[in-house]
Length: 542
Image (cartoon, rainbow, N blue to C red; front, side, top):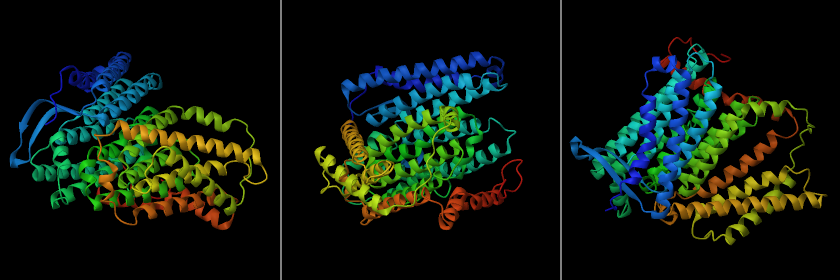
């Protein structure tokens, strides 16, 4: 059994969500009559929550043991365990708490100025506080059913923020589409909770993970189905293909909502997979489904992103692609790498959305623009070869066991492909030795930083996530070469789309600009089955 947790850390961990819940439960009518007070309460609570989380992280740094604590417990019928209010503390919990509480505090401060003067700003700050409280509750939950209820609460509170401008028909339609996807995701997660409880007779994370650590043989049928349901729920939360359209269209919401959504809430899908990795990592079917969903989504979204003219829409497609990338990493068993990706993406995307106005100003500034060049396969091949050598050499220098872990080969190949894109941005790789040397030096620096961070997160998350060597046996054969081939193909397609104009390129560009019309058909279907309130039937161009 896990050691009993001393009182200060659970108090500090619960302090963040409880404080935000207390502020967020202010009646909306009172919040709107005292909007500036509500804004100050929201900002103060968010910063205090981050401070408490930081203190808990410092204490955990000197202890470092996975621990659980329960406030009270209610037995559930059917021998599926109990519903408890408590916490589960490990490295994943601490990292996510620090990340979300920090981003929440920044977004709250930004929203105070952004919404100043809006007649409903008090109501906005109320729901922003409740949304932060819900996702922090999700992170600290020590019970699977408590986790699922916080998961649902996060979605319902976010819905109020997405519907902030109820007079905008596009905002209502996008929020409605997200509402439907979220309810399906909620149902699948609750069913997974029921199957896990009936199979293991407990809903406590520490007991579930202890059981999985000592399990021999394949998963039972109930846990296999539960793993697939967890994957489906995560895919719906992360706006994966083909239910990705709502994330692109919620740009009608205020910018602070977009920042919080893209930097925090949409990451809940990847966090669900990481949290449930002790179960999911034992299912080859679930890993294959994760990898397939992620690979298809990131390929589509990465290409569409290149054609968008709106900064916020381009960022939204980028988020969809990055979420697919995280699920792909999880499907390859690289859970610590997915955690690193989640942290980096959250910080970047929060800054990108909050600074999107400055991005528009920079785009409008007079600069020298270069005409696109024709696709140059020789330079592409040269860039791939140089980047591949850098990845192999630096990866070996950082102790990457390429020959033992096939998934790491895929990760190294992806790094090489990404670095080759950087090298292709130089004016030329032929006839300019200085430019080539600069490109190689910068690429080596980036490769080294990547492998160093990968090793750092591997070390920090050791004991909180299943070891890669244990996951490797469950990886479907062919998944690693398929992933590498898909990324090489994506690199070629990106260079072709950004290259000189041609009839084929222009035709492809037009279809990609419209997202291959996938969301049009999904929206029409949803409008027939479950029409949005006060919305006309959807048609292309609406």
